[in-house]
Length: 521
Image: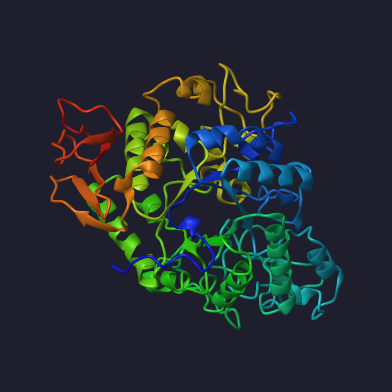
């Protein structure tokens, strides 16, 4: 296996093995009692993040937006929406985070804007063929039908007709029109946005839909068998067009002017050779690896996923990037079966993930062992729930965090009416309760993160695999010596030789129980 690329000249390459913590801004902490999280709320909880032991934050969009998709429909990417505070609030958050040794990265959304963006309002007021419309993708239809058969990732056609008869493209909701990346004004505006936040001091960006943006000439039909919602073996011209790499080279060129800054891409591309292209030396520093998210709790399947996930960035000389959850996928506890079993498996997978070389992304609340919340359909706010049905809604894994106390809103807000309702049963899962319990999931994460940060066993970027019983695996990090063992079988197993550092569940007569993982040296 190739060594990870050296840090850039004049920089530390801090992101290569950093633990990032995703703050879903709406759901983290509310400072002004409106039931919605905000920037000042995050600032007041920085001490918790320092105590948890993460290295960097990723903040979801807090820009001006009508909130059709909770901020991913951006009306002004260079200002803060009043829901979340002010630019002054952001600057204070950034200053204090840096004082605590925390890096801060923010979202950029280059594929589309809000339909309330000044550009789109001008486009709607202008005539077909005008420069204003050329910033977006307006086309004539095929008679009364859309220009092609593309499907929105939120369900339904990816085209909306305007009163003069033309159609505009939106790969997500109709309130999120796609930008035309063949228009040089579009690239110039993103560059302006990047510089705006970099000059304020941010440490990097998470690039939303990083496999989008570029569209093939002629906008050919997609194969009807292609999945509307993600990577597919069938022809799908909506995503991963070769022209997208020009966008990432532009982003990297700007970042290289600001030492020690980085970008990670949200890239849903299943072809490994094509995925590696996003990690070329003049493109992204990191690429989200979603294979762990998509792999069920089975040792053989997980080992294959880990090996494949290491190979892609290694081919590009870049660090691997791991995640088990985010604001768009089921929480791990629910994904692994729910209840006590789901929690045991989620705790085990946390140790597996944090034992791996490279960067790790945690999603707020996973360190508390939170599961999806059963919400009434009328409580749903996600646009995906409206177009694809309540079962497709992402609200169940976006519910605000429980901080303290015995009743909702558990210190998240001074208002009992939070933007999504919080369940009474979280009373035993608050940060306050778990900090006092050495056996809690929060205590497990804190201990694991401290060991990962301070123990020399976590050196080395190459894994060596042990022989293991059926339904189990064990790997060792060459160079540091950490051993991680996972038991997905139904019986306790003997551990490899070594001193036990940490286990996700108590050992049974010295053996690793089912649905558990352990670290040894």
